[in-house]
Length: 129
Image (cartoon, rainbow, N blue to C red; front, side, top):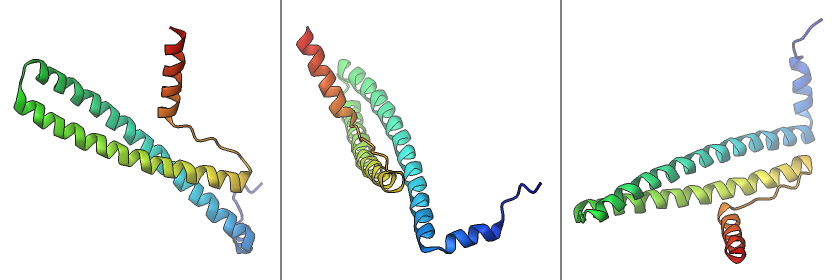
């Protein structure tokens, strides 16, 4: 029994116009998913870095250490700006992935923003108190 794929079969499938477009879209879907996942990982790292800087800033504020506060505030601003850029990039990739999944597989993918969910859950818990 031969378990190897027939290389000629792959070429014949790719030579058809519809299959070639399908495989190109599938490849772009895989690339977009990989980039989306990687950008989400980076956002998590940025959030951790912001938390660390915020702790250091709060300690400097308690000790009235103005030069360190200024330096940490600048670092916080830069890291928050980078995180926002990555958020925009990830949102764009999520939309691209959702569109490609809809086109290729007929899946309906709902894009959920963490900020919206967090605000909605906060509003519901405050109204319950």
